[in-house]
Each structure stands twice: as C-alpha cells, then as structure tokens.
Amino acid sequence: MNGELLAILDQIEREKGIKKEVLIAAVEAAILTAARKAIDAGPEEEIIVELDRQTGKIRAKRGKEEITSTDFSRIAASTAKQVIIQKIREAEKEVVFNEFQAKVGEIVSGGVYRFERGNLIVDLLGKAEGILPRQEQSPKEDFKQGERIKAYCLEVRKELKGPQIILSRTHPNFVKKLFELEVPEIYEGIVEIRAISRLPGERTKIAVWSKNDKVDSVGACVGMRGSRVKNIVSELHGEKIDIVPWNDTITEYIKAALSPAEISEIRLDKTNKKAEIIVENDQLSLAIGKHGQNVKLASKLVEWELDIRTKEQSAKEAEAKEAKKAEIKAAAEPPQAEEVASVAGSSDLSALPGVGAKTKENLEGAGFKSAADIAAASIEKLSEIKGIGKKKAATLIEEAKKIIGEK
Image 1 (cartoon, rainbow, N blue to C red):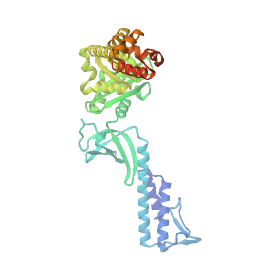
Image 2: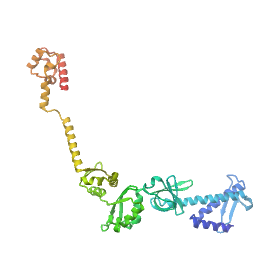
Image 3: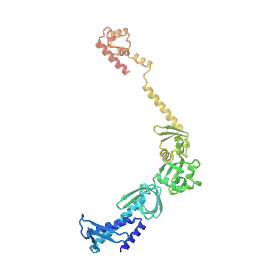
Image 4: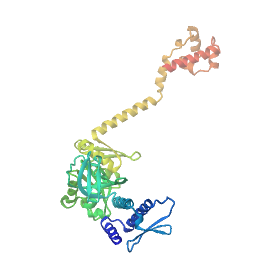
C-alpha cells in the first residue's frame, strides 16, 4: 500500500505537472486531519504526521506515542481521501493559473466548445477553458461548435471554480501578435510596429518602422505578392488592413496615415495637436472614408486631431474668420474724430434741462457751444458764467454727460 501510494503520486506528478512535494504535503495534511478526528484530539494537542519519501510509510505520533492504524476509523480514512482529492484539485488549478498567466498578452489556440449567453467557451487544448465574451468578439465573425479558433489572452482571474481565462479577438494587440507570428522580421525585432488603431471587423491601420535601412518595413509585412498580410486578413475574416510607414516628421506621418487619399496641404497647430488637412474635391470622400473610418483610424494612429477640408471649404472658412475679426476690431476701436464731432454737434445746449435762451446765450458767449463742451468743463469754470452757480454747474455737467453717453 505504501509503495503504491508513492507510485500514484509519481503518476500524478507526470500527468498533471504537480510537484511531488506539493502532493506529499497534501497527503500529510489530510492524514493529520483524519488523525485528529479519529482520536478526538484537542486543537492544542500536538499531532505529527510524516510520509517517508523512500518507503511511502506514514507515521503519526501523538506526543511521543505512535498512533497505530487501528486507531483510524473508516470516517477518518474517507476524510483523508477527500482532503487529498481537494488538495490535488487546488494544485491543478494553481498550475493552470500560472501557465496561462504567463500567456497574458499572447495568442492562444483552442476549439469552440459551447455557447453561453452570447459568450464562446473555448477548450484550450484540454488544459483549461477560456471565455470569449460577446464584447470581445468581432461583429462580422461567426464560429461553429468544434471550429478551431485563435484569440488574444487578455486576462487570467482566480475564481473559486478555477482560473477564468478571458480571451479577445477585438483587441488591437491581437492584430499585432498575428503580425509577429506571420512576419519573421517583426518577431526578430528588425521591424517594429510603432502604432496600431483598429475598428474590429472593419479596418485596421498599423504604422511600421525598420531598424535596418536595407529592410523595407511595409514590404516585409505585406510579403511576396501580399501572402503575409492575406493570411492575417483571412484570420480576421476579411477585415481590411492598411500598413503605413512610421515617420517622426508629423506631416509625412499624417500623409501616410490618411492613405490612400492624396493630401494637398497640412496646417499644424502643435500646441493643441490639431491638424487641418486640405484635399482636392475628388479626394474628400476617400480621406474621410466610409462612415469616417479612414480619418478616425488615422487620427488614433498619429494621436492628433485631424480636420479634413477641401480647398473651397478652407477658403470660405478663412474669409468668414477674417470678416469676424474685422467686425470684432471695429467694435473695439474708439470712434473717429469726425464721429465725435458729429455727436458733439448734435447735442445742442437747449437740450440741457434748465437752459433757457438767456443762459444759452451766456454759455455760448463763454465758448461753450455744445453739451460735449459742458461735460468736459469743471464746476469752477462753469460757475464763473453769469446766472450759473456751483450747484447748477454740477447739474449741467451731469446732464450733459448723460446726453453724450446716450449719443
């Protein structure tokens, strides 16, 4: 029996990948639990259980006294068996978790096992089950039970039932990893994918750069007669892929990102990372793309806000801006001398309250011809005129200012 136990543990180690020491520790813990129940030992009472690594013999001691096999009941044996199974399952879960935790960020393969509320359950080569949630599925893909599938390992979570492996086919890095598998130059680090933007099921843009001037980054990704990129498009069920050269000169990078449209002019706002793109009329729809796909993906790729206009649209907007500036400038400028004179001239002295014919005559004789002259005068100067005291002078000045303000 003892030798048979060691043989079983060896077999589990080979088949399940669980270290033998972990299994032995589980067995010792199980027997210890069984021994405490069998002999009704208190929680503080010392019980020692050891499994001989050479013979497989199990020794249990209560203090200095050895516990013989007759002290173990059938209940204790059953409990020990259950604990051993539980420990083995826990160890198996840990092995699976560690294995797939190391694969996060990589592509894994499996077969479609079943469907659960729109989610795909994927059998990962018999080792574990992965979940491809509905939101991580491309809208234009449809898989059948038993079909082989590749997916990006997005996350591995520890759950009570075991590791939960979350997969994705919509993540931009899924496309990136497909290129690594298909293009040796990327895998070897000669060609780099500097940026990627994606609308799953519709279109993807990637910007590539080569460390070696002799290696064409775009050509390496496309392959002979498009063989490499065709394989990736096939895996993505027809999703379009644009491969553009990365460039540290932003204008050149933007032109490449907006391909296949031809760009006439680019106006940069470097502070706000905005660019106005000028194109010919026949290039507008191509630059924007179906449902705005081309410009959206290009904007994500270069990380700039891109605003596309035709030359005519740009010219009209420029004219409108200039007209607005002129309007604002005119409103902010003070009135010209002629305008002031006109206002002043239109403000007759007789419009002032309390100014009759005699007072008007006296004011005009002193050089005050209009309300503007009164508004600019001092109380002392005005009160020197016959018939006007300081109080009346103050009133006239206040009323004159009101009239000037209204004009």
